[in-house]
Length: 499
Image (cartoon, rainbow, N blue to C red):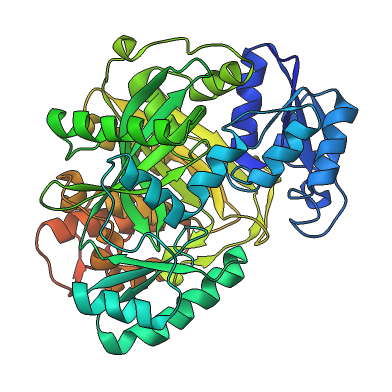
């Protein structure tokens, strides 16, 4: 086993990785930008090294300096977490070239799955269903027009080199195709340095289902069941759960087998996630593979009982998986809510500031992964994800009730967060019924509620309004301003609301 691991990340995921190292008796090394000098992950690590610079490229993406620090600290392996360098095959090759171990998949596997068109080709060869569309980048607009004429609309243009919604354009008619094609190319070039795009049939109101897989160097492949990640805004996940409420045992068997086949197709080793779209008829299609640890891994750890990070480290050290597929039993239900520093009541604008209050929820079955503490500074330089609240219950209803309670108890002072939006989602009938798709936020979030949320003076008021809004909407109220007699929990609860 390793004696020391360099963590090349920051925030909550860096602390999550360091905690696993601590439990395994492994030393942890942090890197940090000058602006992160007092950050929690720096203080939590056994050692920390500053990388001078004013940009992410100068610091957390500075491969030569990261390699130098690894050797200077005596680290034997590097864990990238997610984001930053986690899916960069060039970085993986540099790590291995300098005699270090990358905790994750091989550079070849990352390269194969990094190109969306190459991944689609590979999946089709291996019998994994893909969304109908092109499997080569489009050479010109004429190819896109020919596909549209043969298939019809709606269609989706997507960047070949990346994801996260960058370079993605929905096209509803032939007149929209040319400008959308040009816009997709521009976005793809700016985001990934590659303007190639492809086109596929747009799946109307699908669910986003993903399967966690883990594989070792001895040919053992297992899945840790599936997650539902359909509560999204602009392709950014907000709430995830496991297991997926709409998945039957038969469908679970089919989709997990497809995920294992996808992982085997690229000779995958370590932890990874296969993402699928599930349509209303029960057909599912390969979307992409995330060749790294996922943000939402805690919900899978709850329902499977497996510590995914510890398995990652053990596999990278050359050990076989510590369990087999037959050892796994799907137990209970888990939810994760991502707490972002953004104002849902004001167009989801990012929020910045100095954290003067941070009181996390606690209790049985509640887990908070955070990189915050009192005195932390939130800037616009990094991703707005502040923390993750995960809960575990005996069933889905119990988990939802526990998440509502946890979020109401969570106090973050100094920035505006999306906690009111999270509570709003948890109180919507479509969510509680499990009857929601990736268009849920876009279709259901109401302007009247947004306006009232904006008027609230503090976080507790926003939580109250969001909660009451969901309750009123379930009772069929339709947009009149209304007095809620007897609804006050305390002096801060609003007695007026736009439904």
